[in-house]
Image 1: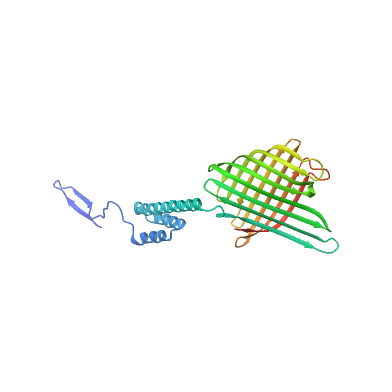
Image 2: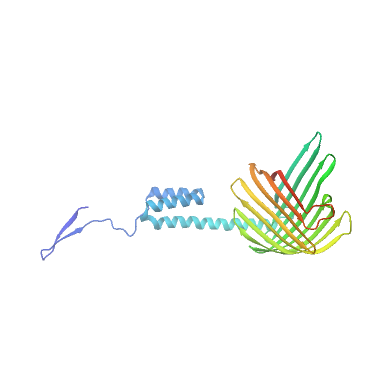
Length: 310
């Protein structure tokens, strides 16, 4: 636009810009608005964020309208999330005791023949049901191995653990557990525990919880009298999703009682090989400072198993 010439009474000549497109605020171009609305229609927050960032960089005069469109999308997403959360809570409240269970099963086996025929099986099942305040965990494991007709490993473990959530980071728990390991010198071991625990880390890719409390243990030895002791229990549970296909787990507990300390630690590495199917290698460290006569203090085991999540 060319400047206009203005002559005043005093003869002074002034130049003024005429017909400048002055607006209270610039409008967002229709193609840009359509691009944002198309991204919003997908319902994908990541896609909407990307499109909004590009629109803000290329259309600085339309920041106000872009912000209004983006805020409207975020508000709708928040309302939908609240509705979904309430629906899920209602489903949990109405579910029967046999519903909403999930977990994983593991199995590994081997067999050989010839001069030293051997056979073995390792299997475990872990179930969990998580409610609004209560969580129930059931687990069982069997580990059996024989060599040349002689049993070299025979372990059984069954446990039930209820938890009550005090807050998102704090819970109380109970634990009932049964073990049997004739090779290590005891036919049965019962444990009853209770205590308090907390979620130290609770991220989507990393979770760590710890717990501690008193425990009562009774051990029935194959030879000798039974043993009853009150002990202290400390345990941790770690789950780390290292990559989308690889995860690391660590389950460990320490029991300290009069004249004896025991440690059980299982470290596992899992990798996905198909839908809900994983390959797992684990290392178990089992230490007992005062084992029965004829048994060793430390027992280790490396397992290769298949894991199915359900």
